[in-house]
Length: 273
Length: 151
Image (cartoon, rainbow over all chains, first blue to last red; front, side):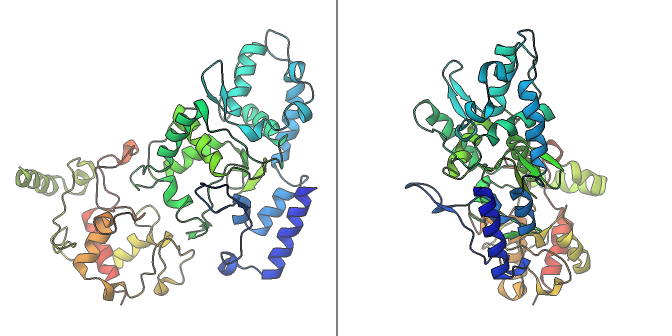
């Protein structure tokens, strides 16, 4: 319902401005007011930086290719795997109720492991410990599908990560990584996504680098891309040696960047370039 | 010490040619005078036509990714990160342009513009680029020659 409304709003906005590429950056991008002490005044989803065609694709549940993953993982949710003879459903019941809000609050502190854990890791912990099944590999279709499915249960809910208490040192580490220049091109996340967001860079508008739509269906890849793969891609493109997916560095960065988008509605599965 | 290193570098260049330059790991030293680099990095003037190619090529200068140039209007997707380069030859001397391309942070401390002729002091550089600058000395000179045509 909310999604339909957003789609309609996008169409109206596009029609009203008779948007062409040349004037697209003049169009006001809708965002949410940031809390006091935040780095942005207005927090803006990557959705607002995309063309009206891409937005329309995201807004249509039947056309959005990301929903194929949601459907596949809805079946996977019920599938018994591992020596304990359990499925996700055996413990969690209906994902629509039990998983509501879970994906909006990730990464989250794990009291047992004494560290933050993201959605991919949480799913694999469940598989290893509860189901006694093999954990899925990062970037595997199964893991990305299930991550998408679980996060979709928070669709429209505000991103709400906790960054205080034991999370604060991870938050600081993520912040430090965000502002560090890497690679032969000597660029930090900040160089593009803070200082230059909204500007045109070769063939694309630079967004704020928000994570509320991940895993996101990337049109250029023709598949869903998990967040840490996107982090890797950014580092690779500035000719840096990327950190490993699910490493402490990327976990810390995931936490920090989630905070930069605090309050944005979860859009998973979003559609991006 | 510095002189002997430079001599070794020069010898390496003359013996091995371009191939040797690719694998050179010695830090590049820039001869900065008054926020500029008066001397050609190769000792010879660059070629503007070759420089235009370096300017446009995405794996080389890729300058258009961030800058606009009216005379290159037929090319797609001029960027908005950096200032327009129209008339840049009138705003900066050749020596200033050379330093801005080679290592712009020496002048504009916090710019996002990469240093195109620097090969050290960078973090987590991908192995295939370690010890290498984005452009060679000759490519920088060619870009300078092209920029000088932007009056």
